[in-house]
Image (tube, rainbow, N blue to C red):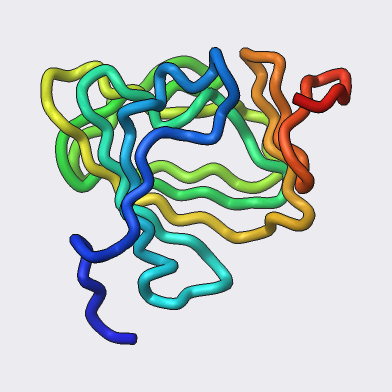
Length: 149
């Protein structure tokens, strides 16, 4: 496909989290660069976090690796081990199956931009959310007890 028109790539704002879990992610925006390039084996997004926005609820994946690289600004990485400040040029990775809930928060007064890369395993991946009563199964979201949302 060659060069990607970043401004022309699909832009997704907010999240698919059910209420009330979507509040912290409602202003986040992703440019879906992997889809724009026709990639099928891994996803690539340019994530934009305005001040106060979160990348997601704290989570981990059973079958998907994740990698983030801070392109611009700074964010706070929150994991089970605590918090780390990530600035432009810093990166972090999260192997599939490691039960370490993580997410990024923009606590600064400026927009942060990050490159997100992850494997695509939607048929097998389960996403666990340690802080909230939510689990994303391959066929949709449930409560941790298995009840459908």
